[in-house]
Length: 193
Image (cartoon, rainbow, N blue to C red; front, side, top):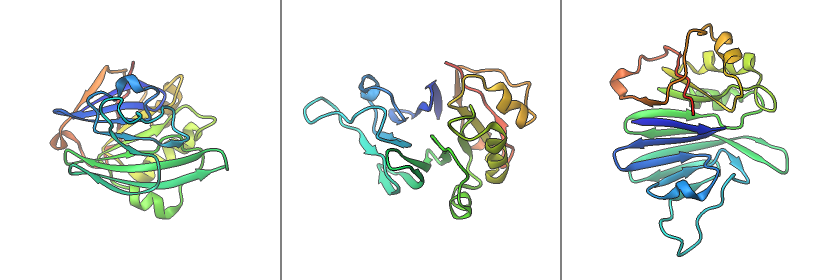
């Protein structure tokens, strides 16, 4: 599996020819993508219209989905009347990924238990308007993923400091297999653009 960071909460997760986009910001990247997962509604990009080439499976709501062997479960984490936020657990290439997206407050205990013990967690790490770095670090400790990937930040260093991992350097991409992930290690992998 290869994970690349495109900025904000926009990630590409790929294994072989199969690709998932998290919160894409435009349609240019849709080509060759099978699934698009949006953690905020209204989405940052619109789905491709009929006749505009490939149409990936579009997910923007809580629920359970299965597309070509990839399982996606989503839980609503906020709704202010204008914006709905959703956290997802994605089982892809035998790796369980948690995507907290645009999370702005604490998770309920029920959702926290559903998301616990994932292999990889993508966490908002930039503070307001999302979780404060201290709250994000506390949530990471509750979830205990093997790998933590910060997102939605201008400066990741305050989040890294909260997790006592200040010696982490930005990487271009994460190339990982299930066997390489130490359970509950909470090792930060900072992906740069």
